[in-house]
Image 1 (cartoon, rainbow, N blue to C red):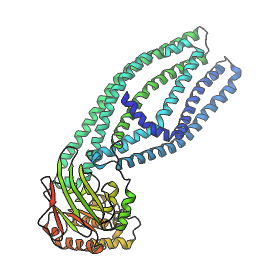
Image 2: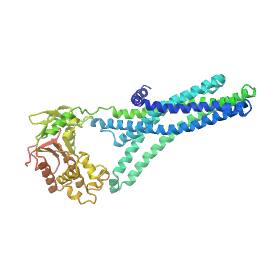
Image 3: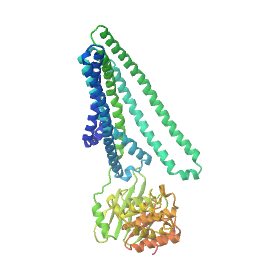
Image 4: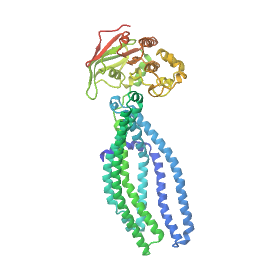
Length: 562
């Protein structure tokens, strides 16, 4: 229960933020409940008038009954329209807020999560949260108004029958407490299974080409069916539990309903109440029982919302990136010609895997520095340290002007780097869209110039739609070499003082590779270029080379020349 309260305390921030909209939504729900109670009272007068108990009121009772019915229709129409606007606004804004928070989390804290899991938390769990914020409080108020209204009317007209109607309350309370505990277990399993299913589906369709090429369709079809089977068994198990509990509570409710109906007939037979009163009391007894069941049914809803909140909290409550120094970093970028220096750098992963200890590195403006070493020894990790995705456990890593200002490398200094990873990932959209991600106001001439420097314009200009050619998901319409050149052009476009190339020219022939590097150097002679590669042809143009191997990083004696 303490965990549930903590989760709802977190949800409270959004309830407070949208209290006015929630209040309007609640008011619309309450109006429906009040009209429902009014319909029961008016129906008693109408039935009494029709049966001759109070014939003089037949016209007014009929008019009032019709008026209440029409009012319900009109209010429902207005309610649906306003409710949709409120729901869309709250849902979109909460999703946007949580999306921004997730993107701001430190990379090391979130790197262990599968993308499909994050995606489901972002959509499925956040959708549950927004729906709960919008509907839970209004439902609570509406249910209690229905329950309280029905109880007061029953107590005024027949207190004994009111107590009979609530005779099943103890059983309902006991069953709901047991159900709440089991429902929490089922909900947690369902949410985790849904995340797994999302991850499996995403992985399959993102790697469809490889699956086909390796003839792995039977394997992944079986994997898909296993997840489906597990989901089905979970749903059937949950349904079996809920069905058994429903049978018990329904039988109790039906017995109580028969008792209320029999008691009302007995009073009618004795002449103590009219036909209209009997109809109203029976209806109110049903409403009272139903409202009480709805009150106890709010707990599973609160639990589902709490579990979804907990899953989102797990992500958004992780440490956020510190970007307080961005303005200072932007000033350094305007000055250009920056150096990068690591002193006594020590780093290990959260799981304890060491990368290096006491590492030193220095790159001056205008230099080309090479990083060499066996795969998995830390070259890519070094780039992530440079980008502020990771932070050194010990030592310092600074960037600045020679003889001038400098600052510690962090997420704030990321704007001073442009990184071209091994995967050379392109995003959906056109070639122009991919380039303008880095510089939204870039003119067509600038895009063409960047492509020319990356030796990419030679194939882009031959495409039927040129810069407006669609890239498709993961850049599937282009070869690896073409994707690398577009990625390089995207990095060049921003004129960042430091360029990081992580096997970024591995798919190019040696002649094209040399032309690309020469073009980059000519465009900005003060730019520091750091290259991680395996081909000797790359290191032939390096001023100095650092070797990352065996938990160390030090300058290599086999230095290349320009």
